[in-house]
Length: 290
Image (cartoon, rainbow, N blue to C red; front, side, top):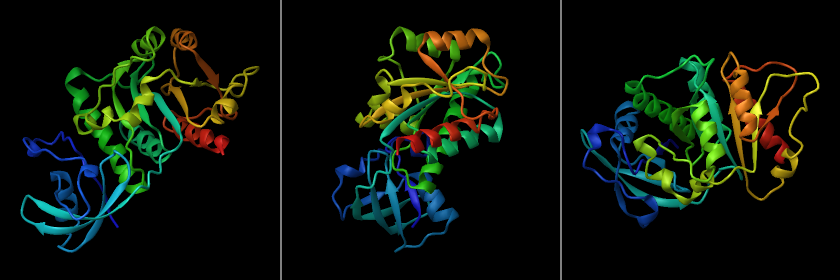
């Protein structure tokens, strides 16, 4: 069955004035009005018919089997048939500080990181980075990348979308982590604004159990921090990763990362592209945790 993210808050101007309840507040058998984005995708693009069934998830945990009840030009309703507590989130919380790259490479990094269960991605700009967004571009790009993550959730079965966090310079982000790691403000796209306040995501406000910087392989450098296997044995672990741009981080940025507690982590003997590094890092973390 098709899966759709049921956003309780929206960045769609067509939804202005409409409120959408958390699905958990509704009883099985209740009728639910679909958001404009779901109506467009399911009913117009996919040409769904009354009686068709699908899956809704709102990011607050679990998912609901639903059946289309009514369809009109701009609206559609479903009835909640059944609830499943399937979460599919990993027990390891991960927040990637990712220096932004151009076009499809950034989309790929976010999409694949989502499939591998990342909890959040902090967008960064850096000295050698290719992308420095103008203020007028930020909101549009943030919404686009959040939708990339949501679409990946719809495809892979994850019921808690990762938060894509408003871009900062790498210097500002590292300074914030050093100054007050438990009070980092998370500015996100309006579509996940309510969701970001859920208790599940509050782990991101705590100091990380381990911070690692994906680094270029270097002779004499440890392959990975000694504490990583121990951290992965915890019932729940929170790991922050820092991944630089194609040109690498500057020496000053590397020094600042070290002062903020980021330990170098080299995976293999080859240099990974910036869109490949998150995939390899997350896959390795989950493999080591088994």
